[in-house]
Length: 307
Length: 307
Image (tube, rainbow over all chains, first blue to last red; front, side, top):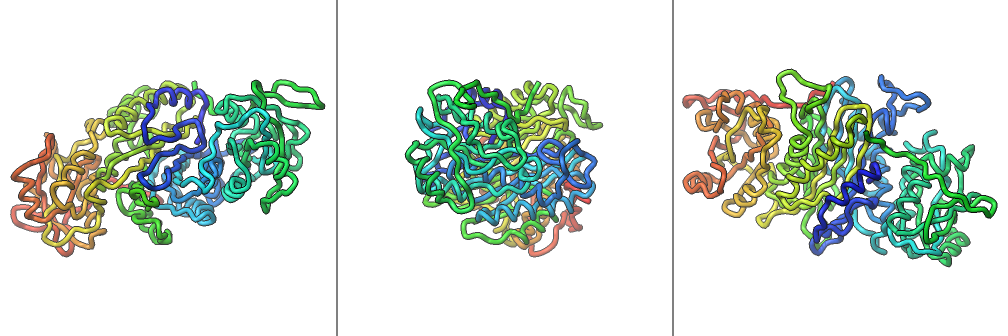
């Protein structure tokens, strides 16, 4: 769950607290109490053609952006929601899918999209339980809402990082637009494994760029951070600037006690990923450490601009 | 939750049954078990500019359709979802909201929309717990997912109608496009009141037109129905054909035992609405009774056509 920061802030001020709402806007998922059952984690993400993806055989193309098959777009639509549940160390359960399909070719497109969404959903035991199918003269729109439960170690939020904590990431960053943004496997299993091994004090998935998402985690935790420029893992052929700002990495960024961080770095206990320590929580400011010299971190990344 | 019928059928065949899924596609909401808590009812509806509404001050206008303020569009977006929970005799709890806003004027539009959604949500004790805010060059898109719990009498489904049951509706039909489709109050309270008084054997909200939604209820109940043409309540100035096919009435259509129906008709126990008996469940076929003569019912109504 994301959106333009200022709008989310505006929303938060206007949403009255309700006794059932454990977590409202401003985290990766909301959480609502559900009787004697586990809390219900809820997230939603909307994908818009020409903004979040471009489609093969569509008149809407964007310079420099490779167009994708409906199957891959379906993968992405489900995976971005799964990534939000992963960011809370949650267990995904069920999803509903709304689509606005272009009239021409909409049936075939809808079916291919569904197969893509279902493939990712099946991998994580998620049932697609319903949806709303529309046709119109506009571009393709997909909106998925995903429901989940807290993992055994409880809900991990963006708040909770403390001065001295180390910042860890679950994989290399940058250059996602070359294909990873469509094909990534959300870190649901890795988040649950991590939460069973160490206390994850705060976590977020990197959707809009390391520096921007770090700034969100720090805002919720009321702290600052230093990133160690030489330790940030980068995808092949990617610059530091791209690793900091490209976004759509969908790796997890977490704050853990330094002892835990060192143990994870040494043991690398999670199959299939390498954990990197990339910085430290400080009291105030966002900084980039280059050659032992701290300079202000440029908070770049993807933001929806509204006028 | 709606969509093109054939697509929903296609979906249903491809969704494997999961032990947690109590109700999948093909009803007004899905239902998933939630540990020791009540089942989680889930519905979603997407509204597209130029298809489901037109906006004041927008370049997208449709001949014959009055344009609406963002506040009224917000009312509708929340109310159509509340109506799906009402159709299950459920209690709405929480919602997430995704929007695709046109870049120009998107902030003001987003705020006005939110106030409209929040007004309807507040009336029914629903917390808006999060969402996803996007901007793009396309028309306005709104997708809401709403979560609820079963009411005290349990979940009412589309299936369950039996031969001999009477069909009742909660208010006059037709002509919704003149304004009701934006301003209607969903029948959440009325559904709960009805379910406490009689056994609602099957129910659906009339979103796409009486004849089309009746055909859906009959399909799920594996039965037919006769509508009594002279007893169908109509909005002022509306023809029988319009009452049968206009859609977006958002009244409830339910099947109840004739004894219960007669009691409801006589007592009219629900404040603010008048209950009408409009037909009877039969074993097969959809029929319209005109002057004691049964003729096949023309199943008209709104359907999204995909090519």
